[in-house]
Image (cartoon, rainbow, N blue to C red; front, side, top):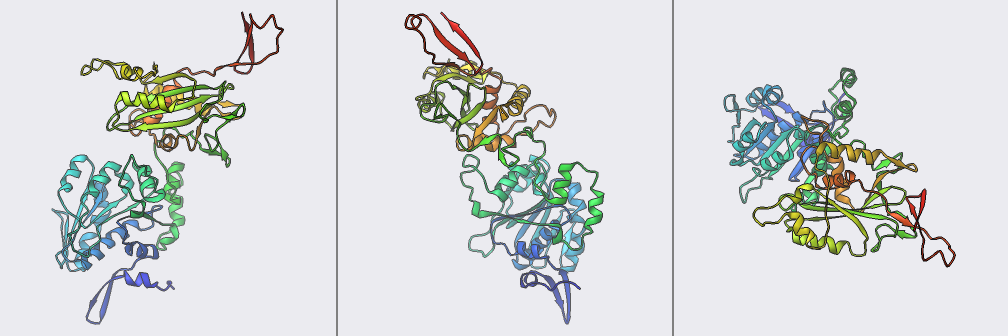
Length: 482
């Protein structure tokens, strides 16, 4: 016997009354009713396959088209074959039952109250342009993670309602936690961790996600479905069966903030050496301080990282700074101010900064060095960069990672490092993207940075002190110089 409907399910049941007969066209699940009841501007359904997300999306569109005469909505899939295999299989029959029609040539649903439903696909940027001049009260992205983030934001600009209407302009989506923009959707709708430089108008209160689980679709034979997916790769099974968020093509899968429940590549406290923390205004003597610079103006920022190498060889990124639309001269001055009290061993950078700028007669490196920042060109190679960072991430010193990041010192590096993707055509290469902090790190990783020579104290006879000094390199070798 079926469970009785909740009041919310009854509220959003779609039925037609014909005389004494009631024709139930759609009866939502509990999660479906919760989704229909949302008034927040941007919302998605997320979870494993087979939970009925597409059905909920399409019926949400039907419900609002019937409730709001004269409105228009858009349902998009990434490709036309996907659209044909999903919504277009059912829409003609559904529109007939609703008293409307569906024009196959135009892919437009015509409702009896004047509302319109557009069904389309967006495979390329040219496809996006078709919709940008249109106005839709609601836009539905089915399998939203298959769309690039930039495409989602562009289509979102079409979501508008007439002034004074009671309609709610809404962006809606449904998705498995796997796909091209999985990290974008996860940050915008689920974790709501969107930095200001990505969007200075993002408001986390305008976004939400409803989590779906296998039990939310009682009509699915889940045991049979699990057997059918048993031979798929593990990360696909986790996404499609368990609804776990998976970022495909991650380049630095060996970056682990924690390991066995303990801090690993990300630490919460700065290392202390000679009773002085690494991130003090004047870092401890005996620690080599390196700076790395990846310069940009607009749309790319300028990024500088400060990295300390302890005498043991362990490196810690303890500080980062970012500048947007800032000239090379001002960036150089800012780096100087941010480095007061530090004994900087070297400042490594992108070698292209030394290319002469015809417009000014000087290179970017010339302008920065004029502010007292001596620059050393590193290597700009996206294959070598990835390999070099891998070496630092996987190296161990006394059971501790050779490279660690201070959580409060470099939050943007920590955020973007796991988002870096493999190039689709060359998996060994770092793909273009939000890679400014990671590329800065690579200049350090490829720059042959070494620990400082640490001065040791040793009691000497009075007549020796004028002629001899003792130095310890690292922590083992001792040599004397005259």
